[in-house]
Image (cartoon, rainbow, N blue to C red; front, side, top):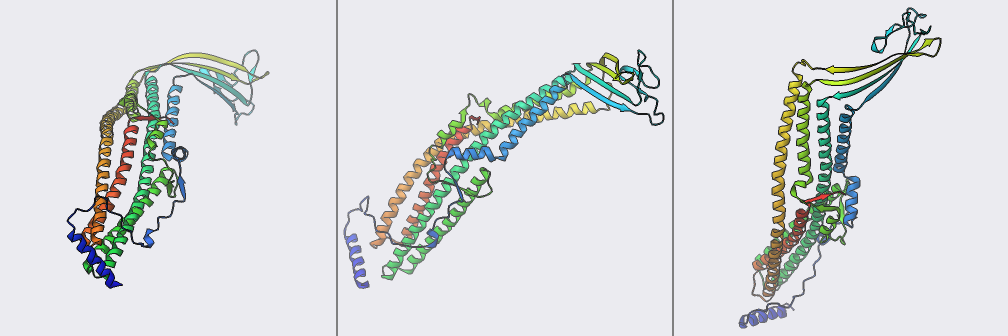
Length: 467
């Protein structure tokens, strides 16, 4: 049987050498050898998979800690704004108390009421009424700021900070949307790359089986076998590395969705329509200055500026209105109101040991830092947007060249295998063509996913997400 095979190979080689005609552009496919290997078994599926973009986004809304933090920042800024407003609104307060003189239990406790009215100590409450022992008092106080420039500056600063917090929330949503899209694309790409790596290993094993048969029939040598086995080892290494990247991508997806376990992507996931799906949740900006992170940075500059003005206004006097109503218990009768006064209070700061000056310098430094942060953010955004716009064109060109490279590598590999089978090609050419084909197929897959990612980046870098 071996003699007939050798004879067949020799005749085929002679026929090829005697035929000067070029090889056909599309040679007939050669039946591949059937190979089995444990590493050809795919990676087990993830415990949980995401089927649609809406499902993934719903999980982000529900479980994202970054989103919760941004929402808490808005709540905190709103609380500070309300506190700043409270210092400018009327402040009413009621106070009640009971006084008991331990040394003279039968004598009303001595005290001074609001407005300097004396209560107790034998004082008469009026109309024959005297304070009781123990003595009960009630005091009502109303204060209203009339002129307080520092407080108004503080309110402006707090409201600007609230605007910045809202903008930070919008930017957090944009970044979460972009991050979710990136990790979904990465996971799908890793799934596809792992599949390509297994196909590459299978082809390498088929070449190894073909070379081994040729060696056993005497048409090859030991060097051919070593070369193809080396190629198999390289394919195994690529497969192991690709499987680990797949596991890491699944872990990253699970983390992005708020889970501590790996998550996968359903094979039916529509990755090509991801940009259209993202457009449902985010809208393009009218101008680049309206991007949320720039809005937040400008709001921080405004807040820091008003905060510095608030500290400077602390040198100015303030004018307020105060009214106090005092009542106490009497005998006979339930009680009476003794005094009700209204007073204007003018407060003039004189010397605070340099505390105010230090506060002004501190807040001036914060304002300078905020301005520098704004300028840095503006430069980063300009570069980011320019790169994102250019990235789409670059990705499209790379996909086009990757398709051409893959087609040429596939054609070269088929011709090389045909030549090797008929005895005209070497094992080195067979190994090189197989490795080139594996790399070309993997490169095409990655380029296609990079194109999807580039389109997402180009849209989301100039979008506002209000979900």
